[in-house]
Length: 331
Length: 173
Image (cartoon, rainbow over all chains, first blue to last red; front, side):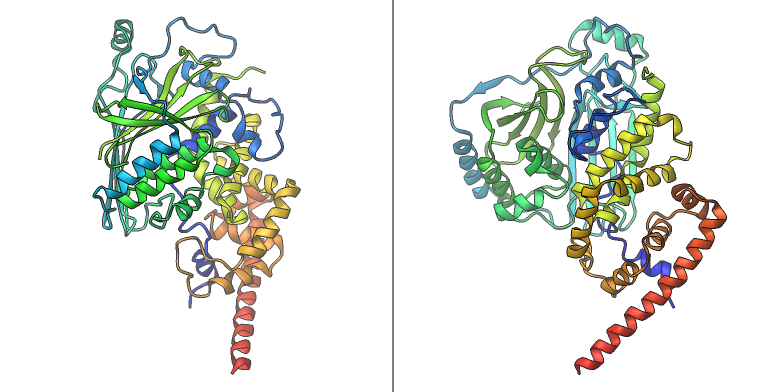
C-alpha cells in the first residue's frame, strides 16, 4: 500500500509547473530591482507584492557591473556594449507592418517540431556573470543549444563565443585581465533525465491569436506590466519552442493589437540577417528601456530580441543609448 | 548602512540557487504563478534586507520567510482563499488529473493549517525534520513529533474521504 507521504507527493501542484534551472528574464529583473536598494534598509512598498518586482533596476546594475562598494567613484571607462543596430526607419503603422508580416508568415512553410525542440541562440547581457564575475572589458556572447523532447528529457549547453571589443582599449584591458570568459568556456552543460526538463509552457502554443495571448500570459503579467512584458513572453517562448507558420502568424497578430508599439523599420541583426523591427518603450524595470523584436521578413520567425537604454543609464557605466542585452536565434 | 560587494555576491548566489524553490513553495500554496513570483520578490527583498540573519543553510529560512509573507498579507490571504475555492480540485495545468487528485487535496484541506504546512514541507519541499524545525521555528524533536501526528491525521482523512466517496457512489446507484 502506498504510504500517505507518497500519495501527497504525487499531487504536488507544481509537479508539472515551470521549474527551470536558470533565472529567466523576470527573475533577473527582480534580482536587479532588489539589490538596487541598500541591504539592511527598509524598502518603501508600492502597494503590494508587485512593489519589489517593480523597483528601479537602475541603481543596482551599477553595483553588479562595477562590483564596487557604495560610494566608490565611477570608473571613466564604460563597460563594453555591442553597437546599436542601424535602422532604416519606416513611417508605416505598426499594426499594418505586423499584419502584413503575419499574412506572409502564414503563407510560408513551417511546421512546429512534434518530436524534439532544438533551440540555438547567441545572446549577451550586460549582467551576464561568468564564474560569478561580470566581464566589462569585452562583449562576450553566449552560444546556447537547448534540446528537449516530448518526454521532457534533454540537454542544455552554453559556451562563450567570440568577444567583441568596442575599441582597442577594451581589448587591451581584456588581455591584461587574463582573457576572462575566453571563447569556448563551457558555462553550462546539463542533461535532463526523463521528465526532468520543465518548460515554462507545458502545452503546445495555440494557433488562435486569442488563445495564444492567454497562453503567453502564463508566468508573464502582461496585463499589469504592459506590452514590454508581452515582448518578454514572446522571447521566452522562442527560447523554448520553434513555432509553426500558423503560430508565428498568431504571435504577430497579437503584437499588431498591442498598445504602445512602434514599427522601427528594417535592421540587419547581429547575425547579419535583414529583419523587420518593432519596439516598445517601458520604464517598468526602473530605467526607460526600448524593447525590440526583430522578425524574419519572409517567415515571420523571431530572429532577435534586444533591450536598449534610451534616456538614462542611471548609475550604470554605459553611455546612452546603449544595448544592454540581445538574443539572436539561429533557425 | 553601506552595501558591500561581498553582500551582493552572497545574495546573488543565494538568489540564483534558491529562486525557483521559493517560487515553487509559494506556487503550491497560492496556486497562481504570477502571484507566486510577486511573493517571491517580496521574500527575497526581505532576505536582502536581513542578509546578516540568513544562515548558511538558507532554504529553511527562506521557506519560513515565505510563510510569513503569505501570512502577513491580508490581501494575499483573501486571494488565496478565493483561489483555493476555485482551484482546490484542479490538477496542475497541462497534466492529466492523477488518480484521486481531488480526494487527496480534499483530505489535506480538512486538516489544520499547521498539519497541512508540515506535511507540505515534508512531501513537497522535501525537507528533513531538522530543516522543517528551522522553517517552523521549533526544535527538531518537536518537528518530528508534529510530522508524525500530522501524517496519522492525514492518513485518517484520506480514508474518510475515500469512504465518503464510496458511499456517494453507492447511494447514486
